[in-house]
Image (tube, rainbow, N blue to C red; front, side, top):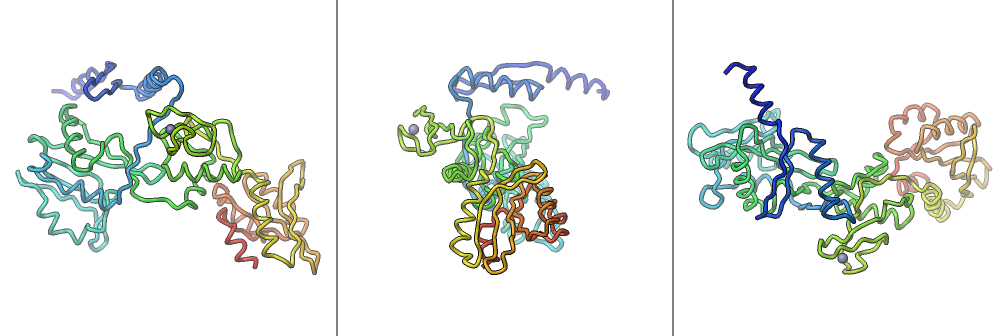
Length: 382
Ligand SMILES: [Zn+2]
């Protein structure tokens, strides 16, 4: 076949759109060459079926990265109908951490070889692997994984040139290996700390909730809202019961008012904005208790038509003032410059978003603390 024919064939192969119904598994699918078209039809179907809510259920499975890899490679013909054919490590615990591909040369599986090389990869996880290839029904098919912004791994199949039947077969068999649906699950391989989540919220200034953010991030978000540390916005607290049969939606930041289960935030996205006066009030209260030699005042100042809440520390002995300013906007950097010119002492609380401006502020002699500051600030001041 000449290459142009191959291209023509390729074009023919994908130039159709189909709605697929899987009655057995109660699933609706839509096949199209356009990802955007698929997304639009997807949304349309969701709105038709669930007119009250457009949400995507969260299927997070907490599974250690190493354990996940171990499960994926511990397969055998008798129990799983799968043989391990090949694996590509991005890195190994060999000198200079080379990437390594291990592949079966004939009809054998690589289980034994992999076992013998265990010391070189036993501390690695799925994150360190490019692909795992299985032999299934005399064919080969691989899986690969990628991470999302919340440190969750998503596993997908490498279907290039493979039939849909073979893919379904592999997915079913892997479901038995892992104990959950491969394509619909997100594997939480690393638990984020609350601080990491908050920093991410503040850096992104928005949070995507379709697909759903991890449960842990939901909880942090609700906690920040409850303490009014971030601004309450209309969409923010609209949540639905995590139990599909409950159908309860609520604007309350509590558990489900109907059944008491956890609630999942719904909607397409939320903007995250610090509630500055409240944020500063928290700091002021802490400083009051800990900095007796200073007078601590929270007030609004104005420079070049720009108004901003700041904290002013006045040394009771010397009467010298130091301002604590949170850097949340470019205008805040200008404000710091202005205060610095007026010879005030300055402590900047920088948002990770503006951490690139650190040097600029440092040149002006501004003392800086990160957003995680509360405790750090206290420690450095007392
Ligand atoms: Zn409920």
